[in-house]
Amino acid sequence: MPISCLCWIPKGVAKSHPRKSKYSSESILKIVQEHRDAAFQTCRSNELLTQVDTDVELSEYNLQDYDQEDKNDTRKMYGNNFFENNNMDPSICRSESESEDSSDIVVGPNDNLAVVGVTYNGTNTLEVYLYNDESQDWYIHHDIPVPNCPLCVEWLDCCSNFNGNGCNGSNLVAVGTTKSFINIWDIDVVNCLEPVATLTSNGKDDKLQSGKSSLKGHSNSVLDLSWNRPIRTVLASASADHSVIIWDVSLTKISSVLSHHLDKVQSLQWHPFEAQLLLTGSSDKTVKLIDCRFQQSAIDWNLSNEIEKVIWNPFYPTMFLHYLILLQIGSYDGSVHAFDVRNKDRIFQLDAHDMPVTDLALSYQTEGLLVTSSADRTAKVWDIAKKTSKFVNLKNLDIGSIYCSCFCPDDASVILFGGQKNSVSLVNLYQELSVFSHFRNKKQSSITFNR
Image (cartoon, rainbow, N blue to C red; front, side, top):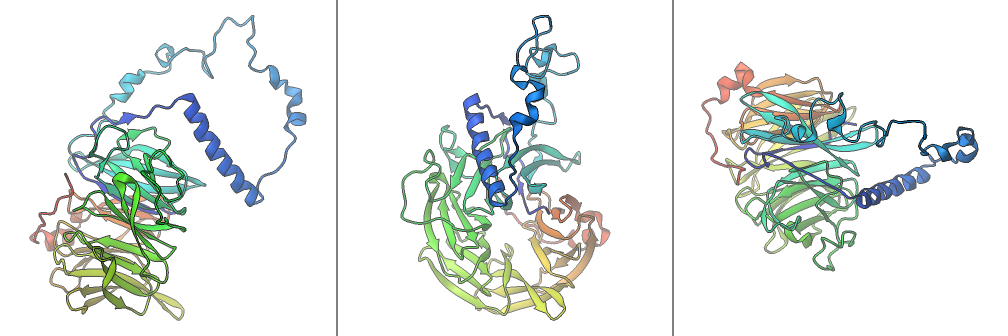
């Protein structure tokens, strides 16, 4: 399975010493039982569960007396070890406390984190990477097992009280999956087994629900998420059930449900400055600009093909981009289109790749720096600063078809790609002389993602 989604976390947000999650034996047994029951039902539905008479097969081994201590054995076993704790085991060099204080665990003030959604051999994981632009450190800091295949991930720095510690800024990620709900995970916690909250309307998480609502949650896969930065407790989700839902994350409640599309909604993004404006793109071949104060479409664009992704240009707040996958006889043609919301005019059309365009990444720091990714296993760098498109550079990446990409929020030249080969590629675009010389004197944005 490919890398399905990824996002960055800015410098100075993560706690320097992540908290280690602790569970009671009863809690672990409950979690294991829930996942085991779910896996059991899946196996039965797929006719993969076979019935084996284990009593007959294993009776010759006398396993019922396996845990009985041998009175003649003077060694005392603890679990699977002969030592009561790690400090007594000579094969372990460091104590548990020393391991927790390791420099590999500490997150410095100049470190970025990146969260990557991975599915491999039926196992779903959020891998949290640490990146330092000065030392060039890049490694997996910790990982989080998740119950379902992650399709989209969005960082949240919102006011929450999930842990009962008051309403403080948090380092959270929302994850949309093949299921109809959204899980929220705390990135400052390692060894966690459960999300801190779940956004759903079916009341599965009574502890976090603030009251029953007549509004219904999603009934199909969650395909995209967008956090409203001006109003930090607001999250929008797009689904294959044709709907868009606006959530109040702090209360884990639905604020409104928008049903303005006739097919699956594949992409959405809040305006970077106007908190009430939400851009959505759908398989019904329409793009809609929604004014959420009135919960209705302010402007519509009817196009000839399905919309895969929509993004705003922060340097031109009235300009947005989307890409289409154009189906032709015998081949696919990926193109990027830019529109002006003031008059609905198309500004330019960019024929980016010979094969489908799979993602767009637009720098929030360097004016006009656009990167297109494709199923042809390449990424192309473009300059769209003057409301026209100019090709700058091409990158061949050894990760198969590229499915997702995102610029580092604190380094204008660093971009992370996720690919078909279940691997990521961290690229500094300015290491290419053509890219560096072209963009070094470009206008830099004052937009910051930090608190």
